[in-house]
Image (tube, rainbow, N blue to C red):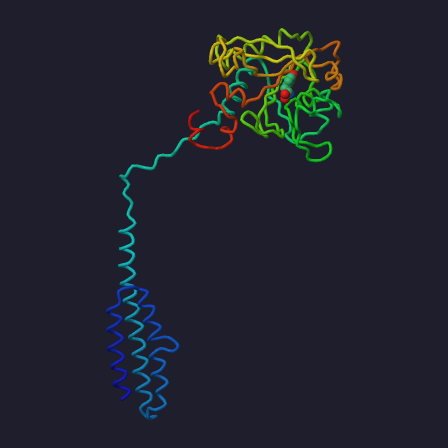
Length: 339
Ligand code: DAH
């Protein structure tokens, strides 16, 4: 009886192993026949009923059967694996003659373009870059620039405070003081960087970029200021651009001026960009206030200086005809790609 059962099982098992098409089917068959509760185990359980003199012979038959199934599964497995690998390799072939995917090339942000252009123009006149921190002390941002606690000029610049006495700088002018504290005249520096004010509309962003300039030496006059800025404006805007100085007020300069350039849109005739005046304001400047020089330990009877500060976004907007400052910070590739 049991001998027939063994022979049947052998036939059946070898047949299904032969028919298997996937290695995962073989794994299932292995469990079915050779597993802990598989067919071989149940055969061994039936050994109790086999007369004791036949047991060694039947035991050998069962062992032979297990070996035969193991071998059959093993060799079928090798065969299937080889086929599967071949299949996979066929599917994964790479056509090296296909054209590649073109990498998109990035470009500089318009604010950086303007920044670099200005640095280049000023470097040609002997300016060096001096960078100050964005988290700044009230002391450098206001006090040493002749803007005391109760000074109305503080209202002009809505400030983000971090702690009492510590703030996000509202102007790169803070760098002027740090520079004069560190270096002795002659000084000729350019200080570009981010500044922060609580302001948000089409022409104001809570974070924007300024570039500060400071020149301190013996005999510096307003003519030097005009000459330097005129030369740079011609380089950055157009060789025939006109500039004019208008009286203004900043606590850290005396006298203070604002500098206008002739409108690039209408050439000075008057249009909507220049609001009919023919002129566009581009920066604030002036002769460094004696008080500021004294604050930094520079003798105002020996030295004089000029300073200026301009907004990079404003220059970029004028230069490229960008109507809203927010376009510059939306990170829309379609917009940025144009520069
Ligand atoms: N700090 C001024 C502002 O943010 C700009 C400015 C005006 C800077 C006159 C200067 C200056 O250095 O002399 O509005």
